[in-house]
Image (cartoon, rainbow over all chains, first blue to last red; front, top):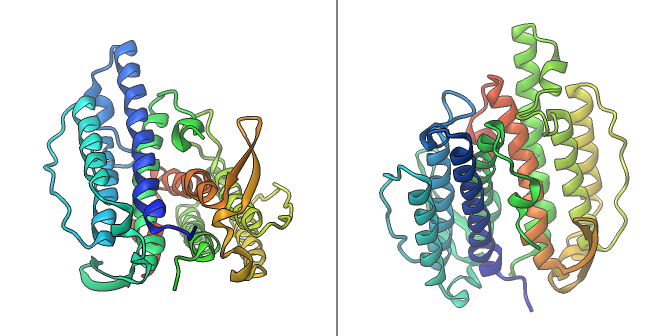
Amino acid sequence: MAHSMYQSSVATMSRMLTNLSGFLDKAEAFAAAKKVDPTVLLEARLAPDMFPLKQQVRIAADFAKSTAARLAGIEAPKYEDNEKSFGELKARIARTQEFLRTIAPAQVDGSETRDVSLTIAQKPAVLKGEAFLHNYAYAHFYFHVATAYNILRHNGVELGKRDFVGPM
Amino acid sequence: MAHSMYQSSVATMSRMLTNLSGFLDKAEAFAAAKKVDPTVLLEARLAPDMFPLKQQVRIAADFAKSTAARLAGIEAPKYEDNEKSFGELKARIARTQEFLRTIAPAQVDGSETRDVSLTIAQKPAVLKGEAFLHNYAYAHFYFHVATAYNILRHNGVELGKRDFVGPM
């Protein structure tokens, strides 16, 4: 067995999206128990010039989608940013995972040497698949998943490291 | 070229540690400019039952160290948790990166099928190298790097996504 680009990207990110959806379950239950308008959490930010929770979730899901599509050399579907509830955000995650399931391991395995074209800091760039995944995609993806978690923890939602890492 | 476990783990985490050290540079400059005791930032947390910045940095560095050591099948050095300044925390990161440099790619490449023994939720567990890296090590490592970033952003330190992702 060789180290698989599919496992490193599509499978790993899909797994983290399940964990992210779990944070939203706990956030929704927290809001109901505390009689807090869910919008308060959906719009919560850690700094005035950081994105609120709802946008952190969308961007995390979008990085999973675009990373998989770029490595597979296919077009990613576009989703509108119009979710207004935990249920809609969880549906966005589920839809993203459905897209990920349409990608076969063989489409991504071997992509470590494939050219990936993207725009970095407003400039076109070409990276090999492996460098794209390690130096770009992971950092963006995990950043948004962790920031969603941190926004909720900062607001009192009872999440633990096990929710972040997921069942082993 | 095959997808390299060394690149996926040691190289990727060392690169992120350089970015983490960069957050501390900016935090140190921020504290000096605002005439804020650096301890205020070093002890800052996002929730009362989350670790403060200094511990987030230590744990991030320790996950890089232990991930590399486990995949290489060697013992990781132990460092004491006694840093009291940004300079000492940056030295901890640099020392961790020095250790990572002692590990040759050949020691880690091929470790995707190697058994890795660890303790998960107080129980002994054995994972294959690839699953250990994807399902356990990445989530822990990126969580602590992102939480260090989020603590600083929440406290007003001017960091941007480019500081997190690093130069491309």
